[in-house]
Amino acid sequence: MQVENNSYKVDKYDYNLDIEKKIHFSKLIFDNLIWLTTKETAIYLRRSINAVHTLVSRKRLRARKFSNRLYFKKDELDYLIETSQFKGD
Image (tube, rainbow, N blue to C red; front, side):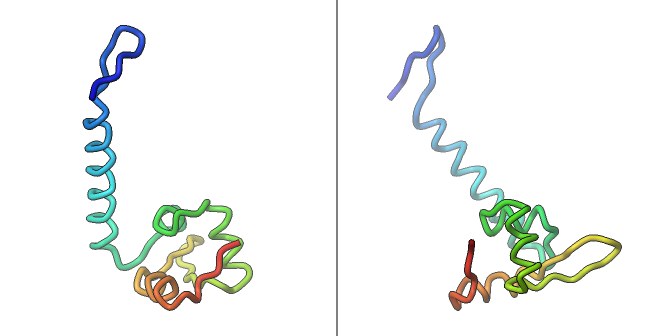
């Protein structure tokens, strides 16, 4: 299915394939990581960086500090999600 928009054609299926490639690529990135930064944690949990900081300050999410940066263990994030102990705001 092609959609014409302002003198150029966009293939709807190509757009969906691009999204699938990005999702697959992001899964590959996170599969190889043990420790995640705050930004990576926000992307992984599909939250904002501010929401991650809020969860840490409310002690709902455990973080380690190294050189003035917060790091989160991916296995712990997976465990919290799988056991439904992760409660978002």
